[in-house]
Length: 418
Image (cartoon, rainbow, N blue to C red):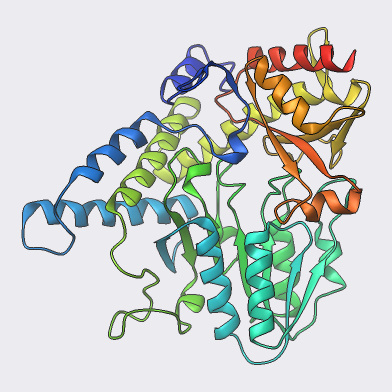
């Protein structure tokens, strides 16, 4: 949809900074979006502007009033992005910190006893929080095993672990290593059928830039995103918490509103740059649809992004023109299988007889930016069971083109002799 609409890909790329050129190395192809997406030019401009404003929130002057309006608009845009009819949206230190707060509040606010449940697919942000607060509250923590072959975890894998005494469940929406999505709605429905009062927290950090988010539709209690992975900048995370979770006791200034999640004065620029992301998605939705309302525009943008990335992933795995895809290149091992359906912009791989670090360096020498993932506290949950010490993650976004993919496959063909 994006690539097939005349002029749209050029318009999309024109809204991002450093699309073709690294400010330190020169010309390059950016296939490292899972580590932090390209930034919108509007985000850079907004960040600079708000960093320079001297006035503070809550004062009796026009400048302060403007800041308060920015925060109100940012929160409204966050609510629109999450499709959250109720609950609270808030800004935190990072996506990881937001996950910790959501899980901590759920664990301390839930009824005593019972168990907590996660999966082996999850990022250490939620795993660490679940482990910490299961230990503090004296609860058993169960981890549902993911499927190594498909790189995901399905609802039926959760089913045998579901009991009425579940208190907190964490779910990752998309794996940052395999790139495979999880059917969050199906899992939550299974959990609710057995333990309706359980608190359910979703890690949406990897998913948020690849398609629409709908917390109302999936029925979660908490959802966390990292804006630097969704075209904004570092320095803040954004969360949503249901009314039920927001009603639990939490760290806050005494005498403040009971539902408030934010501690201290947050950076107004965080709210403003999130609004920039939402404005971009609205613009993109308007280019690919005739949608009339803002939420429909965001959903149209999500569909267009997913379609563009699926086209790129299909080419990466199965080939483009006379270039073979990764799954047909000799010596290439794909982490989590070769399925396109359910894959969100990421494919991780190894080459037999070649160190992953050497492949990263080789691709960089040919102007292609990718990243090594190691069997450590970040990726050991995926690589350890496979007996692998590392892999190379290739991560694309909707602003990448088929021509860029051709250049990548050409280099990979030469490396593998394919």
